[in-house]
Amino acid sequence: MENKAFLYAAEAPSEAQLKRFQEFLQNKYKTPVTVSFVEDSTMQAGFKLEYADEVFNWTPEGRFRQFTDMLYDIRDKYTETEDPKQALALLKRSIEDFDVTAVPEEEGKVRTVGDGIVVVDGLATVEYGEIVVFESGVKGMVQDLRKGEIGVVLFGEDEDIQENSRVRRTKKTAGIPVGEGFIGRVVDALGNPIDGKGEIVSSDYRPIETPAPGIIDRQPVCEPMDTGLLAIDSMFPIGRGQRELIIGDRQTGKTTIATDTILNQRDNGVICVYVAIGQKASSIAHLVETLKKNDAMKYTIVVNASASDPAPLQYIAPYAGTALGEYFMHQGRDVLIIYDDLSKHAIAYRTLSLLLERSPGREAYPGDVFYLHSRLLERSAHLSAEKGGGSMTALPIVETQAGDVSAYIPTNIISITDGQIFLESDLFFAGQRPAVNVGLSVSRVGGAAQTKAMKKASGGVRLDLAQYREMEVFTQFSSDLDDATKQQLAYGQGLMRLLRQHQSHPLSMQEQVVTLVAATAHVMQDIPVDEILAFREGLLAYFAEHEAALCSAIADTGSLTDENKSRIIEAARTYLSIYEEQRTKDGE
Image (cartoon, rainbow, N blue to C red; front, side):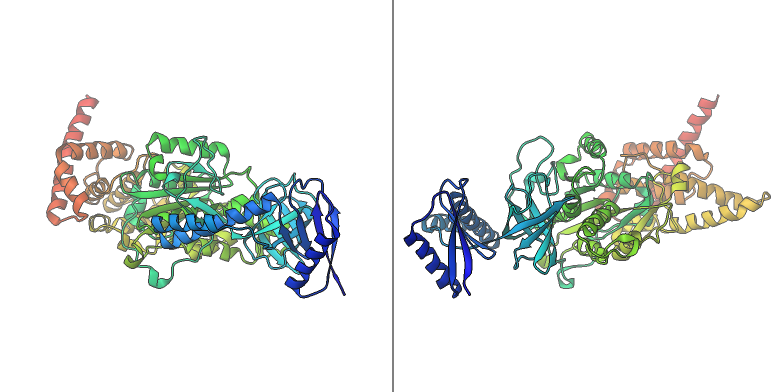
């Protein structure tokens, strides 16, 4: 039985030419082949020879594609050698020796298209996660492999994709350009700039999906990633290479914690990557303006897949942001990456899965939604010295409904991460900002990620607050309190007020140490609760002016000697007397 092949060209070939095509196919595939001519007026030069799912493209476009594929191969070899001279020699030699060869391209045809999902016939050897290109130029990623067909999610609009239009393999997985040029820019999930500042010069290209570092390639998390927030750095410290979940209801300050952490990395040498998933464009514009106003964009990259973007772009956005962060991590640098938020990421993936007709599971999410986030978050690590010693710290954000942390996605991510900062709505509406719930929040790295000074200064704060919260509930049923209980309640109320911070005003490590030492020494015991924050501001200004050497010693050494602790308490009491004297004058 003979198989059929088709020759597409603007002009009919001669009998001799048809015979040569037939002999070529028979020799290549070792089977009888009949070649039929199909007139195609759109083909002004060259021809296409189609057999089964393979196409020999001898048009100018096909030959140019062979040339560009050769250049991509050189780029990959350059990445491996990292020798510019060798790369230039390889490029020159390859261009001189380049010759178009009869290499088949595998092509399929569109069966159905709609809702950003395309079902394609053919492409029998295509791989999961591979990028395919449609005739219109739109790219897509293979997300479903079935018998005789594949499911493709689109990275663009589907308006120009029609039934029976051709689809071509690229034999490449999804990737993103990376490099120093991305710092300070706002890009989409494919690495294209969307801030109107022109093209970005990339220095490398990384696949968005890469295996997480193995255990041997990691080292313990022991260096602090300070957030500048007293409530977190004192009780739930985050280390470089850690994954700390920020979880809470809508409008409880989750993004504010993340942005304040970015602002606190100024002059720390940390590269920050903020990935916005399913957010309003206006919210991202406001966030970028906040970063610019605080001079933080000079070390920050914003990856934006907004609510108006297709679900496939929202799905790949966190992986693309991680690839950008990994470029710097493998250079031995420290990276902070924020995923805002993974609830919307899971919803985008659920949308794709349902459109691809996968079986829904709990809460309609597909069965592999846990793997979706585990393979993402496991890529954050503190690399070993042999691997350069770089780190990537992840702060994923998850939104809960009415404080339900037992829902599917929150429980998944809690089990993946190294702790969580739980933000409580009641605390937020009571004015406690950041609204950190001390009882439900935890950091599994703990004191290993604190400096010695912070560890010594914050030793009993969490226990004191826990006792206060328990006593506060108990004393609601009693009006007759002894003096010791009243004093304990006043101290706890002062601590809670002291943990409040204004947005975009992070505190340095030495400022936090001074504040905590003064508070735990009960220097502020008799200050009215509503004056605690004003007292703290005045205290820190006093130390900056009169105890600058002491603050510098704490910052430089990261330790707090008993002598320095005594000096802080003495200086705090000196300022207390000044403060009370001034308050008496104002009262008169």
